[in-house]
Image (tube, rainbow, N blue to C red; front, side):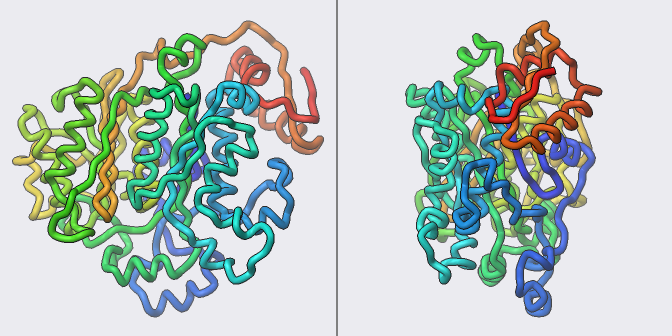
Length: 468
């Protein structure tokens, strides 16, 4: 019922969806301001290190808004800062004030696997270093600042972290441990060492471009960003008149259980987790309209993922459309599954499937026709209340698959009150005036009744206020 993101080339979900529809490639050269040693890397490493999907202003944070001192803010991992901002934005998108979220017993379940900020700052230890760098604080900090009392945990399942986190968030809702859960994932590439180590492992594309399922596939491109989703049980959300983007209909987790090597995936295990997710959702393979791939563009991973999909979908009668958001923004590693899930949610909500980039000729190790697969290369329509699968697999063999179902327009539209009173609030007088200016511009595209209802019932009551 709520979405927020900061992704390469996109400051929020609307901009992200627009870039997906238009087939924008947000991968670029590493900003010189990001790594002090970026110039040195450019001489010693391939384009796979020098290119990636990067955020702008990753060092910016409104500490005063969240009641954090400048010294503590400087000691906080930017991943904590980013998820604080996205948690607030996601609740606003859901039309839910933090005070309401706190009363509901809201949980926080995030996925994260990177500790780059610790690499950069641990030598300068201080009183805030322990809480600033501990990965568990990515979730705990949000719960503390917003006063949320439900379960609060950060999950590390390597590259599958964020999709595993969403699955566990759904489980917390089913168990009645929370009425609302903020979930998703975050990943920031702050230290050059992380890319250098990945390059030495041999996973990065030397050409700096992800060619998923394509004959040119030679590795993945690193990306970064954060995604937060607001989840509630469907019956409670509809009873309260919440706007519903889509339904998480089912999911499953498993592990490769051994195989050729720790970092070599197993097609049979991937097929098994997809079948279990379908069973959880009460759906058959023929009812799935497309699958958002794990889709890294690696020589080893792509053929195995395709084979696993073929075990499930080859006999369904028509080819299954597939694609990967990693071709647009790079591989977000700990947040990759959440980025793929966001693409799937927006797709079923809009009734369109955006293109997967950089595909020209199938990988010779992937017989798309025999496997019943088809890579989406241009914007395609999707039936109303369409169904999408989302896969996320880790290099250590942890597998996750979720099934997303669209909703009818009536279910996805919240009722609004007939009011013409606009209630504004902010932390400071300057912020109040800025908020009023943004609202003035927004009223060109948003109805007065919608704006008034959201401001009255779905925003925090902050100290500086005005009523129009």
